[in-house]
Length: 110
Length: 113
Image (cartoon, rainbow over all chains, first blue to last red):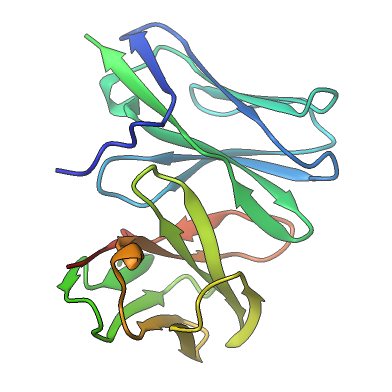
């Protein structure tokens, strides 16, 4: 199997509950933010994005919140399902470059 | 009809060897990337090409040489492989402005023995 990222923060959530994954970004000049989901053995997959002129954006079962004052981004997943188990990355666009955060592992309890 | 594909999926090789990883995208994107993901899942950009031209070259040993024969392909050649090169390598491509959404390939797990 795949090696475990022992230093990855892990969020354990009961199936059906809401999940909130947090991310602190580094550059106050970043103008675009993205959340990616990476399932075991696969590449990262786009979930949702938000521009710096917005503070909230909703998708299907997911919501991204942006707080530029404290340089904080969060991903909310409603009614978490077993298929949501993955590592979640936030990413920021800074000086035309996309910089990925360190990732959070979401684990679902039955 | 895979959007971004990489070959091989697994690569096991001895130290000192030279190996290549291939990437192809059928999305019509102009920009392609190579990322390295370590055992802690940290994703670090290595290179970016736009329309066959190198635009980002992070601090990567010159043993790594990307080659883009056309805008749909970005290959990665690695000379004199070292133990520390063991990682998962992801290729990605990007649609243009205003979005920066990148589409990732399935990854190539490189193990150097």
